[in-house]
Length: 343
Ligand code: G3I
View 1 (cartoon, rainbow, N blue to C red):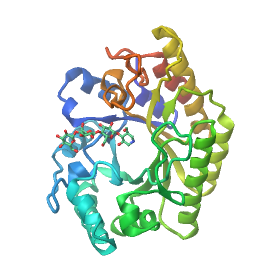
View 2: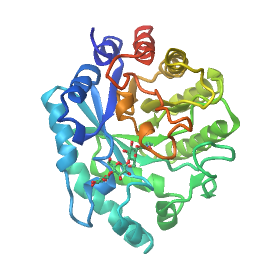
View 3: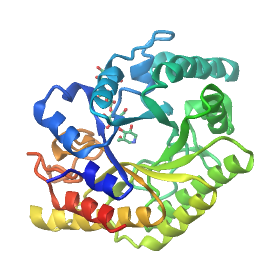
């Protein structure tokens, strides 16, 4: 039957997924992307390490593979991510450590190299990714040292707490029609650390909007955790506050990290994951979100199966994406189709 792209489109929703250019030569992988995704986001090809691996030398090869596929198949592409503390080549980290003037120059040169070259293909960028510090008790990482609400990163150290606004202003100066998105994770859950992170993100967005800093959208990564029940109210209140700032809301990297105590057996695990996705995505759509991307389509390709920090203790692969390892549609796929259709 028709894929999530068509079901979404019929309901005013743009569905898509992260793609890895190195896998597009695989017929099954390419067929899944063709069938299911309307919008593509490069999993690594639009990050600083890929685009400017050496200072002053830009490599649009891998990104171009994805852009060509999108163009040939009438699909859209979004950019991820211009400013982030990861996927930084060592020369960038060293440059930022030289201080504000150098950092400003490096940021300007990156945007000058990337934005005009990608302008025809990419109309929406994650300008800054994961700038907000995690709060006590978060399960993602040891409490990141911070300056106030901001995560302590080379960008913060180089440019100070105004670096987020600087990056957005610099992007807007170069392209008045880009949708400029702030992207972060850990914002959906019903727990104290997610609530604190939501308040920190809100303070940042309110400061940006309040100082006329160009920002158009909030990207919710939505790497969901199954280690606590989900109550939509706190998430709904947050999303309404973001929407009241005049910002769009996107789900940018949906997948589900299963907790250890999930029910045994695939059917029960898949049903629990599907129900969580239906609840969270339904809540986001009710709040006006009209773009939903998963971070991959098949469990086989998920970073959750690769990243040592997240492999399950029991050695099983997380089943947090819409298709199983063989490419068959799972209950999570149906949960998305149902959420899209019930608008
Ligand atoms: O080995 C290649 C090298 O040949 C290539 O030149 C280089 C270009 O950057 O990439 C190198 O491989 C790895 C890359 O993925 C491509 O597979 C990097 O070593 C590896 O660190 C990178 O991991 C990605 C990670 O972000 C860091 O960029 C994961 O695939 C990707 O799933 C993950 O995605 C992140 C989002 O960007 C932000 N939100 C969280 C999400 C999951 O961690």
